[in-house]
Length: 225
Image 1: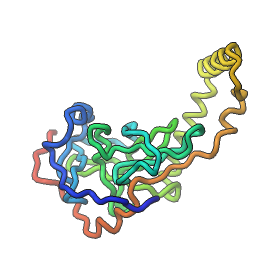
Image 2 (image 1 turned 180 degrees about the horizontal axis):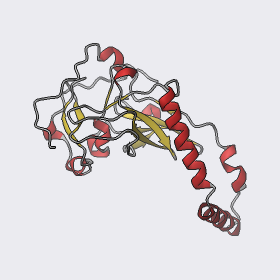
Image 3 (image 1 turned 90 degrees about the vertical axis):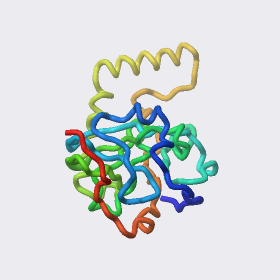
């Protein structure tokens, strides 16, 4: 986790949200001013969202940490060939609607948690979210038993997909294609084991101090039933 290197100066407005972000919103959510940070736009449920719903991936520019001026809208992901890279959505034109999901004031108030799948960041619902609730993410690793169980479920699903006959055929075909071009390669059976352990780094750890007062009351809007 990192400290902010530059604060967000201006208050975000709905008029500034890019068209591609609005078009990409799932039908269950809409953008309105956030209740946890009055300077930001937030994502609010307009229909019930079930526990276990997955959204993503988080979209942004891929940059080195030294190139990022503000870590409020970014995640860090480890790439075997590149090292730690930031997925930076500070520029709304480069991001998608997940950019506008804000941090919860604490782990108790979160209803989303981040999940890394194939070096992409997704958000998954930790509990049912009712219309009129703001979507709030928090990263507390695998300390939370529910999050640990959900992460293990994703890992098991990924292992199952990799071990499927179709996946094995595709891996073997790609391996033979590399061999035909005389490329240095790692055996398909050992490729995954040779990679460094994947880790997930949070976007903005200082949010706890910024959100010293949290009101989770919905803005004055009419929810579509």
